[in-house]
Each structure stands twice: as C-alpha cells, then as structure tokens.
Length: 92
Image (cartoon, rainbow, N blue to C red; front, side, top):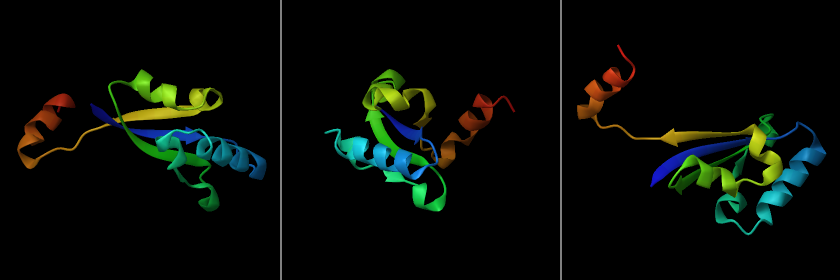
C-alpha cells in the first residue's frame, strides 16, 4: 500500500467551514472524521494521511462535492543510501 497526503480545499467562509467539518465528522469514515483543519489559521483546507492501493481509492473517500478541489500526493520516505535514486529520478 502507498501512503498519500490528501489536501481538501473549501471556500473561505464560516458556513463553508462548518459544513465541511460537519460533513467530514459525520461521514462514518475514520480518515475524514480525523482530518486536520487549517481554517482557524486562514488555510481553508483539511489534511489527512491515507494508506490505499491507488489514487482512485483515496479519491473515493472524499465526499463527491470536494473531489474537484482535492490534491492527492503519494508519499515516500528515503534512506541515505537511496540518494542516487533521488538524483536519477529528477534527471540531474
């Protein structure tokens, strides 16, 4: 399984924040219910780290209304001995 960072944006209004938080918390989905929110610091986004087989599995977790503005980033940790792989991947 791959770990993904999921960033879900919403409008910068008190109503949009309340609706988003309520929708996530009452979804019945563990990842959504435990999302971290940046609204109180002016970042109207929720973040989660999700383990899944692929991006589509991750996207299916996000409520439909928020999917278009969702960013999904595959995460990987590197060990010092993998530095050559990192350089090669970036073509430098």
